[in-house]
Image (cartoon, rainbow, N blue to C red; front, side, top):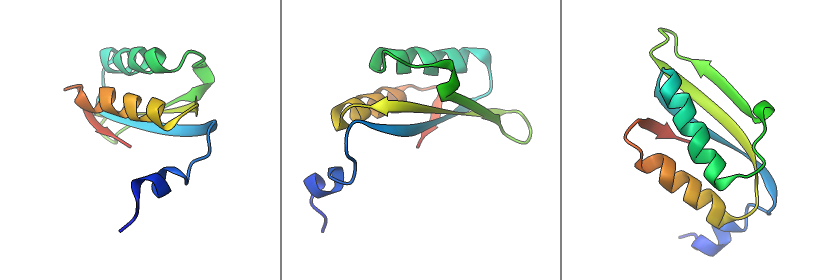
Length: 91
């Protein structure tokens, strides 16, 4: 069984790290995700954000590549995004 400390050693900080967030396609969702990300990442640039809609335009996947500074930062981002009821999935 892998030790949790060994698994976190796979990432060397600081590092560029993509986070994908999926939810219902609407402008409010995109604004929600960006507001959450800005709480945790002070230097989030517009070029860091990519969006892709599902085939029927019902869902949106937002991929944001951040310059992660620590595992704690990533954990906080994933926790806040995952706990939001509008978020379907975080990868």
